[in-house]
Structures are given as C-alpha cells and as structure tokens.
Length: 618
Image: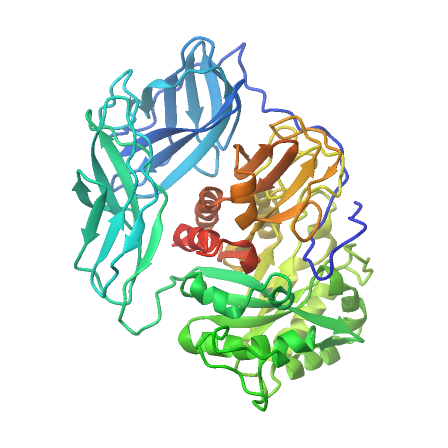
C-alpha cells in the first residue's frame, strides 16, 4: 500500500492506493435472464417513485425510491417496469436488476430490503435510450395506489421556503411542479407525515409548539391522483420555547478545525448562523499536536488568544484585551452556554501530526497524563468533555510509518481511559481500510473497543487524484461495485470488519466527507475513466468543498451510494444531501451509534449536509 507523497498542512488524510484496475460498468445479465419471482408481499402500503436524475444525450441516470407508507414492516421489495424498445439499463447499484426483453425487475440487496413504517430506500441505474418506465409494479401491485399506464407522475415541486415564523406557526411557499396532464394539488409533509393538501403553492401551518424543530417537504398530485417525488426539505425552528432542541439518541458529530479561522474565515459562530448547532450532538476540535511523548497545543493563537469582535462572537459580546481566555476555546464555551446539549472533544493527531504517537505509546501512562493535564487545564477545563485520538495509523503507514505492534493501540486507549475516568469521553478516529491484511487488520481495534466510547470510522478518501491518471472512482463508496479499483475500500466492508473483530455496532460512527475529490483530463462520464491529473481546487489540487461543487459541477450520477459529476474535462465524486440521507438510513439499519463528518466549513451557509445527517439519523 502506498500513500500520497505530499499533503497540505493538517489536512486529514486517510489511506490511499495506486491500484490501477479499471472501473467497468456493472454487467447486467441481458442474454440469459432468470425467471421473475412471485411477489413477496402485497404493495398496497408502499409506493415506488421514479426520477430521471441526469441526461447526457447518449444515456441517462435514473433513480427509484421505495417507501413504506403502511403500518407494518416490509421485509423485501421488488420493483418491475417496462421500457420501450431501445431503452435499457446498462449499470445499477443498491439493487439487483435483471430483464426479460423490455420488462425490467429490480430486487433489494441484502442490506436494504427491510423497511419500517415510514422508511424509504433508493436505488439507481444508468441507462441508454430515451424512453421512460411504464406499467410499474411494486411487489406485484401498483406502484402508487392506481398509477395510469402512459400517464407519468408529476415532478418534484421546488424546495419550500419558510417565512413568518412565530412561536406556533410558519408560512411555506414553493415553486410549482409540472405534469403531462396537469397538477391537481400538493401534499404538505411535516417530518415525513402529511399535514395538509392544498391547491396553491403556499400553506401556513399553525398549532405548532414553541422552540421546536420541524422539517417540511411538498409532494405534487396529478389529475389521476398519482404522487410524484417529494421536494427537498426545509428545516424550521419555531421561536420561543427557551429549551435546547431535541437531538435524539444518535451521535451527530462534526470536526471543527482551528486553522479554519484563517483563509476559510469559518468561526464557531457559523455553527449558529447555519442552523447546524441545534442539529449536532458533539464537536471534535482539531487538532492538538503530539510531540515529545506528550499532547501539546496545536495553534495557540487560534485556540485561545485570537480576539473576537461583537459581530464575530457567538453571543454578540466582544473580547477584551485582558480577559483570561479568548480564541476558539472561548467561543466554544459561549456556544455550549447557548446549546448545552453539545459536548466538545479535543482531537489530537490527524494526518500531519500522527508521527508523534509512536514515541508517545512507549510510555502510555505518561502520555495519558500529559493529555489529561492539557485538556483539563483550569483555563478551559469546562470547554471540553473528553479527548479524541486521531492516530493515522497504528502499526501501519500514513504520512509516516509506525512499527509499535498490533497491541500498542489497545495499550494507549487503556491508559487514556484509566486517566480520564468514566465521566469523560474517550474516542478515536480509525482507518476504514478493510482489505485483507490492510490497516484494520494491523492493530487490535477489537480489544481496544472496551476502553473507548466510540470509533469514528473514516469512510472517505478511499480513492483520489494521488493516482493522477485514475481510474476515476468515488472517494466515499458505501458499498463495493463492479470494477472498484481496490477490494475492501468501501464503508460497508469496513463496518463489517470492525463488527467481526468484536466492536459493538453502537460504538461505530459512519464517516461523511463534506468535500469532493476530483481529476481533470477526463472524457468518460461514468466511473473508471482515465485522467491527466488532479482537478483544480480552492485550497488544494484534487479536493473541493461541497458548497462549491454543488454549483460548479453538479452531480450527474450515483454509484455505490455516492454522487459523481462530470463537467467539462473534470470528474468529481462527493456526497449530496440525497446520498447522505441514504447513508444515514443504512447506518440506522446497521445499528450504528451515529455518524460524523469532516468538516463543518465544507457545508453550505445553511447547513444542507448537517441537516441531512440530522434528519436521516432521526
């Protein structure tokens, strides 16, 4: 396994591979098709909705969403439809797709067949031709309680906007949907449940509770009473109430970087203005350094010295020259005062600063003592609720190589728990390399799990432009796919390997990258293309924030649960609110403790990705 030769300072990196196996499209059995299975169960309490996600002339991308609209759990699902002659599926993911002539059948794969009441799952495909699906059946019955052959369902309305928010009401407005035979009305969905049906494109929801979070979407109905796909959702918090928002029992953790206050101009207050603070449970403050066998300060100026004006400050109060604590630490203190449900951990190491762990673990008790003394320094002891260790990688190679042995990680975590005690959090960011003999196999993560509260499994940066000629591949695939450049480099296999080593599912968090990785010199739209080098990024070649990519290079397809985009000669992969929502559903089905992400500043100013994590985990 080789790693990238050059890195930007402090940028978190995972493991990389220069494997050059080409990515090929999923080969579907088009010649010898299996017989169609009989429906497993009636579909009167479920719907299947089709959306064309992209169209590049010679082909297109499509997505089906299956939703359980009933009151009992669905254990399996099968979607059937007809394509006109000349239109066919060429590759698919998150479902097993077969055909008999122009009749197509998609069955759930092992992990996404069970749908609780109200739950939904999506699968996607690429196709050729120009036709649309017809005669849809879900588990042998109508896909939409009476769909009409030849009558397409309406499009998704525009994402609602909220206005006139009070303690007990909110006004919602949206742009109209379109339909080949006309739109009859709209269902207004609050937290996934229908609360009203209206003929216009606005609605005022009353009778709400003060100081409470709600999520709204809209779904159109045509003259045949077919429903189309739901719009994007908008988060609304009513005024008043005074209490902290509910956050559920899942961990929703984001990394906040101390260097982000410089060129990125991203500060603790942005967590408030984006609406993210009320939707997270934990913050990892990155990074502290590991030097001379000790935990040390990473950036003294950003950490506790930088003065904030009233406009920049979380609470609108300016720092003074003589106050004992300023900088990010003081802003985090103010954030916790306003959002007391948030817990903050100080994260040490990271890609650039992991080289010191090898020396530190030679005397784990002394190392733990140094970390405790720094985290519990009286100047900021109230800011932090524990420690996170980001060692990349124990007994393996990252920016530097470690030879401490497989038991070193367990020894270190045992010392940390002994020193920090039961009332502080002790966590670790860990590799997601599930290849045979790879980084997960290099250290005793199973035995160490008894000493930690959870692992942040870094399920991103699997592939990137450090392999400058490609093949292009998604950097954060949820599952494997035909032609993936390296086996074991996907989230599902990483989580499965940790479970197999004895780590409880509730101690595993799924990782989401708030950025994309990309190549240039790419002519092939689908994954597996060749490239000439990394695409241009704002801060670093081959990497760009989601907030930039969503506009500069919108997604053109999805593979293995992650979006990709081909624009000009650039090819990017990144997660969108839709793919994040799907990944959160997968995490819930796996019984995981929640999710985490790297890092806040890559999100939009209104926190689209944080909102998707929050709503997706529930």
